[in-house]
Image (tube, rainbow, N blue to C red; front, side):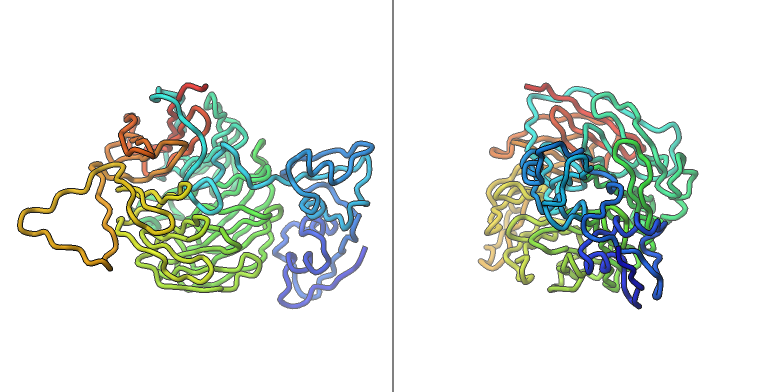
Length: 487
């Protein structure tokens, strides 16, 4: 092993990269309680390649058998040899030997699951699950006590529903029965909330009622953001606390997890990248304005739109600003393969040039295959030209007031007859939560209404979808499910 003395301005993340090891390996070798608390002059033990500490949390732990190689394991678990070597701080495939414990990192391909807000790090809001027929009532769950906070959007992973509810606690619920698997508080990390969250978030939302941030679930860990400024990770199966970091004054948006990092924005104007297994801060960028909306990842960029109305693209490795443009209004970015969207504007992800524009209100768009879905209709991904209205036909102009639109005017999408608070795409359906406390579903290809379902109360958060199931968080503080027949 090597002894290293920390230099001024260095972080544990950068030291780990310098020595081609991992933050977890250094934390384990030095028994550090807080990876962000190192100071100049501090002596650290740097493990050499092949000196493998206890496996990092999360992921699959595999005991290497005689004859197994890192290449065979990569093929078996659907990952790559380089990802296995990097996750286990191993410099060369020949260092993998029988009897060794290896962590097999999870790939970002999420299948039928809905593991974070918008389902993917790009926040596309679309998934492949096909829902058959009309829904029926599934299970519901509500905490015994409500403390005046709004629930988070639900997410689904490992056959569990992860959601923040009205008692200021995050839950893991069995996806099929609703049975509680574990419960942790959003503030303090104990098994009970106690009203601290409502106090911390007083006045933090436009309606004056605080909301929990949606979890992100990846590689065996659940990443949670408390509005008091705490970001923490717990084991996805047990709820055991793994790490805790306080990056700023309030984290209202859902975290994005990808490539071994967790990205968050704060109310005091910072965007941060945290090492996923330890919470070590890799970088932080001051944007000078509150970041209320979640960031989106795509095309090797971190996209963020702060309250100053500026859309920025940041380097995911360094946090450097690659480009910035003024958006029409602040909103949540959505990455859609070849463009990034904020509201009705589409931007080139490489340079921020405006590619097209539609008038679609202040809704968050959904990226579905080669089209973008708004509450009022569907437009072409590449051109922004309307393809069809899926909730209403455009109203005829009043007599004597019609004017010919200019060729340069952006298309105006019609308003739906019932305003939608959120919407997603799943399989062949477009699904929205209306202000009428009903779930609305339309056929994506025809725009025809498929079904309606009355909820037990209003909901403002986007739902999550799994095979045979839609999960909705209610403003009353609980969660309700809709069931569908399975093939």
